[in-house]
Amino acid sequence: MSATAHTPRTGLILTGGGARAAYQVGVLAAIAQLRRDAGVQGPNPFPVIAGTSAGAINAATLACQADQFDAAVDGLMHIWRNIHVEQVYAADSLGVIRTGARWMTMMSLGWALARWRRSKPRSLLDNDPLSHLLKRWIRFERLEAMLDSEHLEALAISGSSYTSGQHVTFYQTHKPYQPWLRSQRIAVRAKLGIEHLLASSAIPFIFPAQQLELDGQLEWFGDGSMRQSAPVSPAVHLGAERVLVIGAGRMHEPPGRRVTLVEGHPSMAQIAGHALSNIFLDALAVDVERLQRINKTLSLLPPAAREGTPLRPIDVLVIAPSRRLDDLAAEHQGSLPPPIRAMLRSVGVSGEGKGATGSALTSYLLFEPSFTVDLINLGMADTLARRGDVLRFFNWPAQAARPDPARQRRGMREEPIKAVVTTPA
Image 1: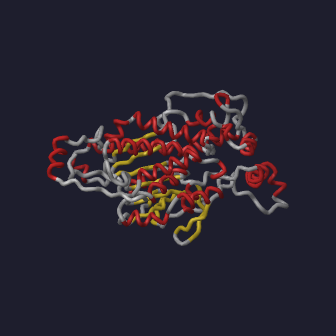
Image 2 (image 1 turned 120 degrees about the vertical axis):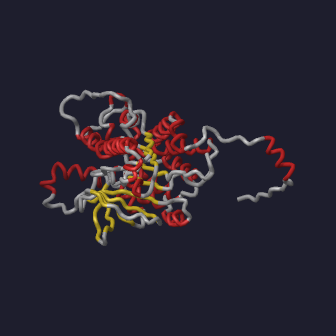
Image 3 (image 1 turned 180 degrees about the vertical axis):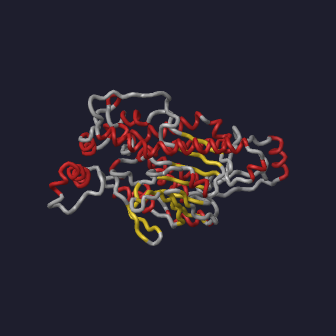
């Protein structure tokens, strides 16, 4: 590849999915490995990064360490391989009573309790531990330096406003990208922080809404996957010419219709899992199909007509699980702390393995190494299985160029040998 050849600006899309976001880390680790194997050097292969929900947390980690891509991925691997439920939400008996038990009591006896109890639970679970974890984990103070040094061009984090009903993408960049406005979704330039991550990852009903400032007023925000009709859009608006999308389910799962026979009416857990899957997973597939149709249409236009349209082809590579993550979660439901298992049992989550029920819901809450390590390994395996697609997407060589021994010998005769002195770090 010529040294003067244009390298397309690459965008990275990290979608939502609670604990399922560990899969993204496995994909990123495999990409880092393939990059090293190809002998490609440089701090960051993704100048434009956009994240939603738990994907926003991974996105912010990469963005704030854009000058150390491999180190950032190693850090994500360490966190997700060792994470526990207690680091994300209160999982002890007292914490469950304070939130989940009270919430379900209000749902069933609220007509009576509302007369004498003023306090009302905000969510099923209390994610205050996640706030403390993120403050220790993500170094937002480095983001401006990454943008100044052009290791990064833009970071976008999406949320959904309960106050206005709009889907909002908050983005930080030093480039002259103007905010965009589309039906029911807007973009706002902002100085990003931990509060945006907590808002973007506030799974509806499960985690509490967060307040963010928008146009000088405070609005309540929830998970950015809600009403996100175009997940790929932020990266394209911020200048990406090709996009790597890392999904969290359904797009590459085994084909065919799967029917799980249940007796009687579906449980609350089954309905909740189905609703969350609709929020987190379905919009991405639709948006990618739309992008592929636009690419095909543009390829059929003559050059003159193509120049007359604001649309441009966007190369897209999607890496998504090859296995149903609901089934994987079912194998590890027993890893949840007993108070959480007891609470979820009341809405229909039970069992472990093949006979488990409610695993779609628990797949978003299973922040335990038994599950996240399997997700990481699956992400790595899926990516390495598509090694050719990844190398073509990035225009990386299949293997690093080997040095010419004759040239090396000539260089040794021409260059004096210099002593290299190292000092301990």
